[in-house]
Amino acid sequence: MFEGMGLGGCILQAEYKFIKKAAMAFFFSVTTPFGIALGLALASTYKENSPRSLITVGLLNASSAGLLIYMALVDLLAADFMGPKLQGSIKLQIKSYIAVLLGAGGMSLMAKWA
Image (cartoon, rainbow, N blue to C red; front, side, top):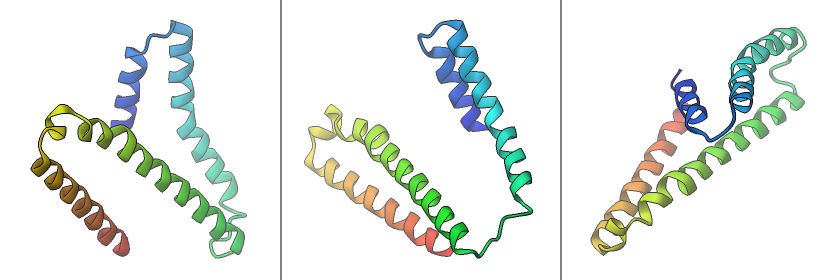
């Protein structure tokens, strides 16, 4: 739900013409029903423990994790870490790096049980 609101806000703020905005909104709204239909169609042939399924799931999980890490480090953290407030204080930089490492470690620890 929140992703849809966020993407909708970004589409509205973008400097595109109406046709391009409508196409973006259309394709975003069609992807979930398309994925559900595809899942229903493949449910009868899907074998959960086959090597092909395990490799596919592993590759998709790895690519999703890589995209999330990239977005977190490049788009979110870089703006904060390169700001004038953080660049002006070594103590604040050290505290921020420790907080990031503790957060990443905590998420890794929780992922072990997921």
